[in-house]
Length: 496
Ligand SMILES: *Cc1c(COP(=O)(O)O)cnc(C)c1O
Image (cartoon, rainbow, N blue to C red; front, side, top):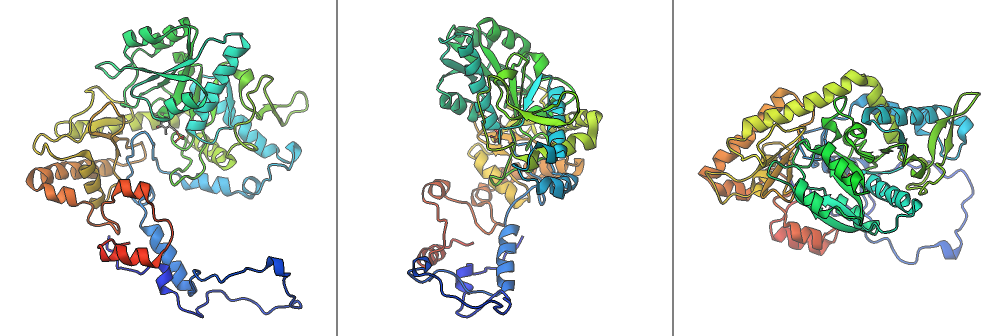
């Protein structure tokens, strides 16, 4: 990728350039009232032609790494390809232009889709009831913990003040528990990457409200004692929350509702192909047992008695809304389309292929990049950027160098319990050829590291912006154009 230097759009500006072709005024001109007039000049608005503006935005869009341009094996994020069919369904006028206040009788198609998606997600995961409200996995977690609290309090059980979270958990788990007002208690992992049962038993008390478990966990490993874990938590009077972010490993193979979980969230933007990244809308629909169903957020959708058709309802003891209107409806359309277009057998194939792909990568790389726990993995593998032939190299160097080879880096330094972690999730939508090219690149980088570590320290060298000072970028982000700042940065050799 070569980028010729282009000045920021503000520097292309010249007085009088104009990009729009406006028609003649066909009504009498009238003066605006004084109080609506702007007091000072819009000095900073650039004046440009249309092609200049188009080129500016197109160029910026091409600087992005995306699933539509490169392999994106970002562990835990399930960056599978988003089929164009799903986009087309979401853009059907009856869905895209539906107004959330237009009333049930004019929204029967949308309601049917929501009802069926509730049913499908419940069936795939083994739960009795589903709410499509939450906007993301993290919000699904908060929903679950608030539902747990409502359930405990409803039974007059006021003493439960702690939520147990494994040390391998995603940061949203402890954040959720803390946000819901609970004390977070960490539970250790054992040498095989499972929950350490002895540590769990020590920490389960009459104060335990819940245990939050990800299965497969963030090491990409199936929790071997999941049934035992759920039994122990239930015996202590607690509930088991399932973080469903890694559900892509289990579709059609295992149902969390049958493994002992009481509640889980689905990341529709991970497992069910609704696009994600860049902070766009997601969906963290949730499922639970019949016991917890009365507390779910509404509105949910049910069949009307008698006449047929569908209607919204709010469960009797609902914790209330988590989101305005009906969740991120466009995401629901995409997930429904995905499930319907590949069917039950297709879903199972998705998980089988995702698991096979991850194990293929693990097998090709583990003799050079140590594997965190040497077991058959599920849909992702956690390796380490610790090279015997180049001990001073860091995972960050390897990740940055991968960009020069045309790949998005894997997730790095997560899970926190693995030093120099490289968490690779290929998903099922990649060909063997792509997986091989990626493994070849990582092996070539290991050789480069042994030969000439400077190449890695310099990486990336092919991008418009080189290695960032990440601390400075986070603490002092420059989010708008300032001629002086830009001139100074350019003098320092910063491009882009
Ligand atoms: C992505 C993820 C979450 C949070 O989901 P969001 O939709 O990003 O809020 C929680 N846990 C794990 C393991 C994840 O990978």
